[in-house]
Length: 276
Length: 353
Image 1: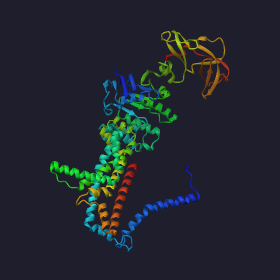
Image 2 (image 1 turned 180 degrees about the vertical axis):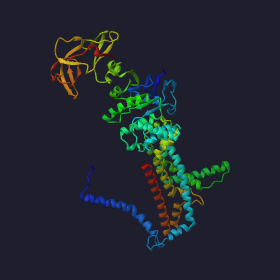
Image 3 (image 1 turned 60 degrees about the vertical axis):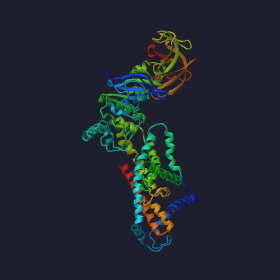
Image 4 (image 1 turned 180 degrees about the horizontal axis):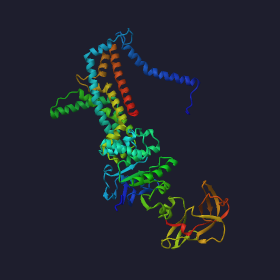
């Protein structure tokens, strides 16, 4: 039996209204975006009848498609590397004691706290100096592009992945690993057969977050990008400066669908794992 | 015969804390062996050292003559039933039970048949496809047992195996564990803080306190002739009367009363006399009792237990507990009644402080 006190009278009504207001606040902009992406009018905010032209435009524009493919390529590499490094650091912090652990722990959270702009300027400076150094030492002529963006994204995503995986690890009974080792598993097998399956939801969550953060980062990417490596959000940002058309709406809807797909996939994966 | 497990001068320190202090212990093959003590006494650390989950700081630890002090747990032929079982939540019962065999590289069909056999032995047939979270505490306990025993360990270690079960189930499992141990024939070493559990189940008990091994003996010996005051007090209920040894047959209590009690301590040693509540008899006060094995007092409290009554008896200088079985026709004593508490001189024991 529930012991919670049900609100009554005007309080109940007000709470209902509040609930609806929150949902409208969340979803009305999304609904408007989707609606106007089908609008046959060059003005973003004026309804001009139904059309799919803007989606057609997107797929016809080689710039837009190029930006999308850049974004996806970067996001995939970023996700893989930051999940591996983030999970490893989570394991190190949660399971082992070593010199300088507290300092390492604190430093790991820094990228989450530092403002994007600061991080962007830092990275810009870093790549400038780093490339100059390489040029001086080895005569390497490097330019910003895929790897500078990817490394920058990994730099802040490790922290996010690590935080999520750690939460999962700390909730896991350490007895389980001991039991595995007691049952003749080597350390590696204990990780593969016991620890890893236990933290998979955390790793999946971290991967999803890393991918999303990489896909929609504008500020940092804009600072460290190079010729030919415009990502989709940076491209959209550029479009706005030239004059806004509903093409932006259609691109946004596509990005929205992609991220929703990722979320739904992760939910299904989790359910399949639990349901057995 | 080589001992199943042998500890020689084993010490374990965590930083400056001495968890296990210079323990010598030999556990025979086929023995149901209990390690008993209050929490923090070092019993679990000792068990974990046998399992290989902790390494001793000093000393020698061997399993069937083979030195294993710092051998990794996956290289030892012992298996553990963990406190709260530590079943793998993402695996089914069958996969849990087969885990050890799989890790050892036993082929799939043999793993399956041996696991099924073990699942039958612990009476869980039909539940092999369940996940641990879909089972009751008692069933999880059986899975943990099967998961350990399927590997045919030379010694089975159990860490507070019945701690998470309710009273009734615990008593059933006590008998079942005992039966299981007789069936498989290997030694079971189990850690418990429950003295009743240790007395009921074990062939021998090791009592530990503050990292030290106080006594290793059969339940009878531990109960009848405890090695010291702590053991006497920890195992069962007892009355402890402080005094000094006068000669091999007499102890002078602190108030000067001489009591007949056999001991091998030197005259002048400070000791306690342990009188178990059920060993003492209560009767109407009279003067013809032996003054060397009785005292006069007054009933102060009565605790009704159903199957027995426990009288709290007050003397001028101390108080005693006397337990009387609730048999038909026994005489009842009201609080305030003057009575005599007496005992057979050989039913009490003298313990060092």
